Image (tube, rainbow, N blue to C red; front, top):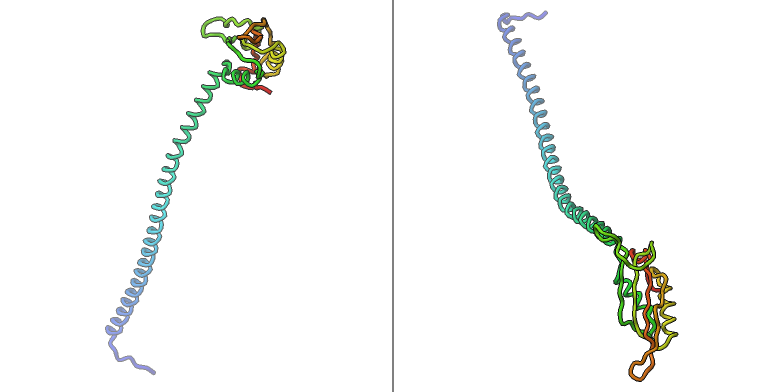
Amino acid sequence: MRINLLPPEIKERQRARQRVVAVFLVGLIVLGALGAFYFLQLVRLGQVERDLADQRAANAQLQQEIGELRQFDELEQSVQASASLLTALLQDEVLWSGILRDVSLVIPGSTWLTSLTGNTAATPEGGEPAPTGAPSGLAGQITLAGMAFDHRSVALWLTRLEDVSGFANPWLTNSTKTLIGDREAVQFSSSVDLTPDALSGFGGAP
């Protein structure tokens, strides 16, 4: 049998102290948990801010690259617009540089030209089609004059004109013998019609 000689007041004080200590310990535990949670949130917030800064830097880099590429896109659009305009301007134009090249390729070595005149069937702005003497559906006509050493060279000249793509209906207007100094030669004039191929640059000497 145990006999408690302590007064009830002292025992009650001990219990109160125990309760205070328990509450204090619980408070410390709660504060510790809150502190740990706050620390973790700070770490997460710092990571989010770093990720956000990295993303902003990446976005800025992409915007710079987009800005640099935009000038190339504008340049490409300008080139395409210029090409479309050039195509529109040249679609009904005779390519005289190609025609002169073709003529120079097919003229026989014993023949030379003294004149070349070209007319087109294109319709001038606000006007009627220019007179060319070429049949309807053709792009124009070229008249040529020249000299040759003999009639055979003139015949070869007409044959070669007929073989050029974009040329049609080669015609000999006249062919007359003449003298160049003490040498006999042939003076001739001819013409050839231009087909629509002469407009698009498809023609060429074989």
